[in-house]
Amino acid sequence: MDQVVAAMGRAAKAAGLSLPRYCLQADTERDRYELLLDFPPPAPARAAVAVLTAALDDNLATLNVEYRAKRASGRLHAPLARVMPPGWCERWGRAPAGRRGNPAQAKPRVLSPVCDPRGAADALFSVECPERATRGMARS
Image 1 (cartoon, helix red, strand yellow):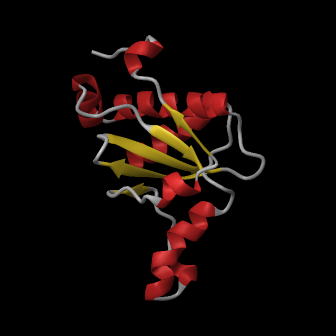
Image 2 (image 1 turned 135 degrees about the vertical axis):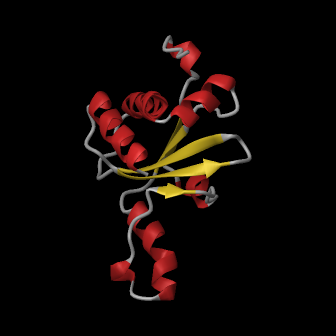
């Protein structure tokens, strides 16, 4: 999780965006990660989200040797970013804990091993991250 937090911090800086609330969830059906982003209004431009997503991909590859190897071999595809409505992350992250106990004690999720289909349905817009080779940043 520390690598994801570090990679997101670097990616937000590269995109010139404030660090949003986010969740990186595994999409095992499509062999990629989905990045669910919750920005305060107004939502950033698609181009800025594309820069953020590409920078996250590059930083994860730099910080995590397993991620880098899977991306290089094609076993893991480029991430997809979904910009969610403001406040979505808090509502989504607290809902399961609220059913079990005090919702004020729930912690927002940064990583999720499963892909929640509500992300696609609730998204304001989605941005496909181009594969590294098409960005001219292929890694060995």
